[in-house]
Image (cartoon, rainbow, N blue to C red; front, side):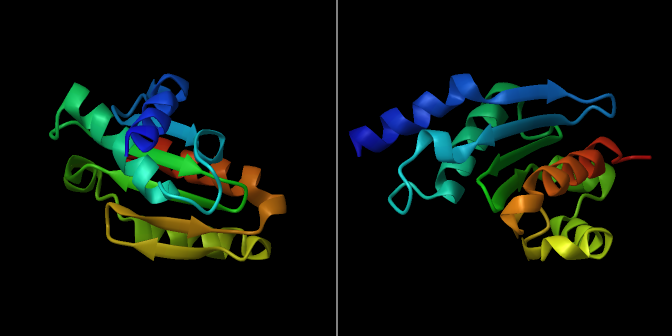
Length: 140
């Protein structure tokens, strides 16, 4: 357990955090750089740990989205405030991206504020940039 906590803490300084013009605090982490593949902690656990640390810093009432990604997937966590303030719904974004980028084979979803996104590795940059654009456009 101590090794796992050390791995998770190592991810925090490498988290890219930015406050977007719409007020959302958007965090991005290449999760595979801070965990062994196919071992505990899973990417979702790492994303949750990082997201929870940011929420502790800014508070539950703050709109915060955390995206942890790998070569062909991403894990997303968001505070309820993002849903309440902007109508954020991960399932709707996944569906929209699947239509916009059909060649990426996008699949995923989960809850309104937590879930995953799978896609073809060769189109990861396009998918992740499109997701980031959706976050930046919230509230417009």
